[in-house]
Length: 109
Length: 151
Image 1 (cartoon, rainbow over the protein chains, first blue to last red):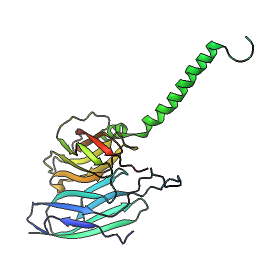
Image 2 (image 1 turned 45 degrees about the horizontal axis):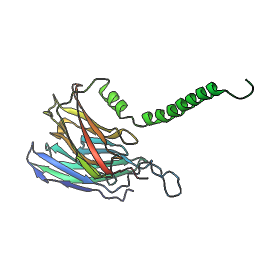
Image 3 (image 1 turned 90 degrees about the horizontal axis):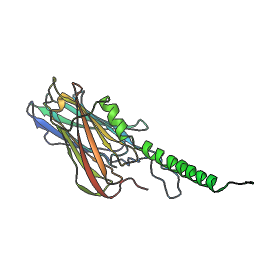
Image 4 (image 1 turned 60 degrees about the vertical axis):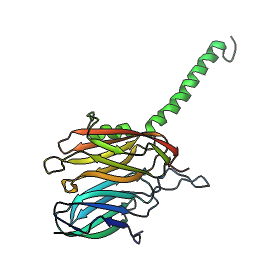
């Protein structure tokens, strides 16, 4: 699972201090609810990315807890205020503990 | 008055049986969706006011598998006053919880967008919690043409 590469887009790579930067991210994942059954009637086990976090320069700015009611290939969009340059790290955590990590750079002038 | 039951007893048995069946049927249906419990737990028993929260969802969702949803909360988002959390619940899904957003003053605006699954036509509720503990909410009904919970 760690080979999955999330698609992350910042609406600007360079921002003035105080500007709002919009983050859009899409990650490929089944988000299996655990409610479905396969053709032989056995339940398909749950597999959900249950936690999403975003840190800018090591500080957490945004997080979300996903339930099975979040669509497959979860998409997330939010904004943060540009304060300092640094890496924007997005992390998704799976039910089994594996993590999908993506990174972008933001330059603040 | 020999063995078996007479008419009156049979009738009683019938009523009892029906009550038993409906009782058993209703109980799991209520227990299944915990949307209301989640909201109560989130707000700490307070009743949130219907204000400041904007829940943007389509009126009719053709495909319940992926319904775009935007939640925004009116808040200055400063260190003194900001929206810390938003809980989204759906009352017609197998489980009530949908998503929970954790905001911080570093967000600048309390706004997030994601795509959700809806099993059927139902009400979606977004409850926002401010850093001072006050709660606000918004409710929106979405009509779903094709349900999004597989099966």
